[in-house]
Image 1: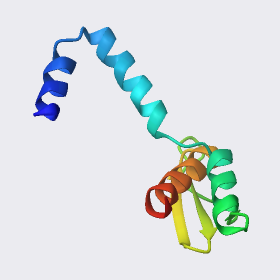
Image 2: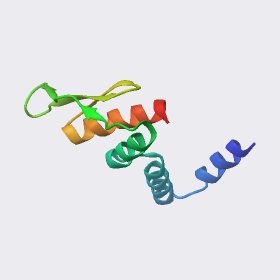
Image 3: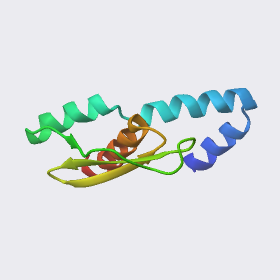
Amino acid sequence: MKLLELINGYNSLSAKDQQEFLRKTSQKTSISIADFATKYQQSFGSNIEFSNAVTSGPDHNPEVKITLITKRGDFTGKGKNQKEAKLKAVIKASKEIF
């Protein structure tokens, strides 16, 4: 029943308020690279490592692929730049490890 109430409440918001709601909730569920590295180091006593970036695609629309290497496995992220690729790898790892 709570899910239905949430959906009805969301649908009753204005378009601007819906965007603000989504922006705030997506920020809360995301984790920064630094926060993940700290939490991982505290939990497992070792640091995370990233592989060298591999770039493919045309210069005007590159795709960067980076792998996060941990004791719990490797997690690959892809993005338009290194920062985006690292963040996507960290989000994958965070969901699986924590």
